[in-house]
Length: 281
Image (cartoon, rainbow, N blue to C red; front, side):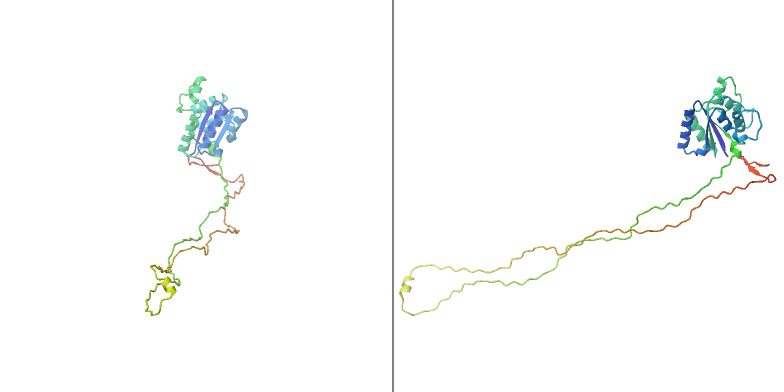
């Protein structure tokens, strides 16, 4: 059931600060009203009751509609406190829990205790039960009943981008071994010692060589020597190229189409109040 929470503040700055706290807590701007006590704003508070010809001022009429009657103690207490030049913050809550949150926020930000103010001004609210600055009441008539809002909603198409992996390449390198052969010619030396029999007269050369001596002859051989030399015979390069393409994204969006039909004087209008009572005019 819809409820209306009213908080009174000694200054407009305190009222604005409370409104900012309400916005931070998630309340909708259109459900929060702020008014200072002067002739213009008093007319604003009573704007929803234009069919009533009561001679009472707009402030009193507003609280009379809110609390359900002129003789209500809360009506007189809030009217008296508001006429003292205070700012009024009105919150239209959709549920009792939301109304309780709004009342706590207003109290925490300086909402005055209306009944204490009424006592200080010589008015005793014997039947009042509100103990804190802000008060909540079920909206029976007035603004909460006669003003209805039809939201107009329009959807917008939002197109973004996301990156998806569509492929790629993984390159690994490893060492492999294979047997190889090479042919090479190697040379070896060998010493041959031969002795043969000779029978001839000795010559001068023979007598010259006829002495002790020693002859050394060595042998040699070639051996295969193996060494390795690395050569770069190729390379693999890895890189990426980027291409761009245009794509058209299609979809449907919805919006509210409001059609207004003027009702004639002979037609019947049925309204539903917040407490689910049906009234026909």
